[in-house]
Length: 205
Image (tube, rainbow, N blue to C red; front, side, top):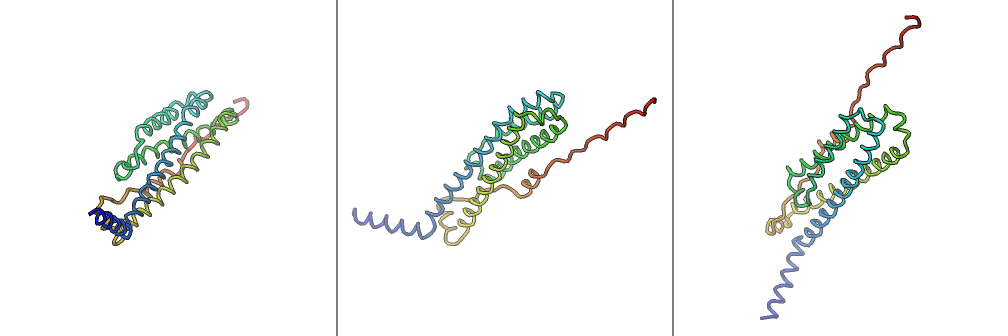
């Protein structure tokens, strides 16, 4: 009886391996690992916001609207710290992406505003924070691209025959991915229009 059970387990393992079960497991774990890296880089960016806002406020306190936008956007991002399983839901991932996009836009507007304050631009602390932010944005892009590739590989694999039968048998579903439409909106730089300078009065006028 024990030999029969062992033989059955060996045959079952071989069948599962041949039907792509092991690869599904590996790719599912790879997606989760890449999602953790996405969250890690987004958190790195969020951690820079308080110091960045405080530094800008020290030189441009009158830019209250932009400073408030950044602070509020960071707060909403903190409420959308979702797990890899939650990210598999299209609506949840869409809300997460929208919150991160809102923070991206707010930070872009903040940096544009800083161009109006030469003393702020020359401040060593601000320049250091700006460099850290730019580096973090690059890390975010890399992490997101790797996550997108992992999800694409996983989704493609579980849709192939006969792996799709194994996936359905064990309840594995296609995962949501970052949308191209929102990516374009997030990466687009904000348009800023400055009011024309008021001409100086003519001498003796």
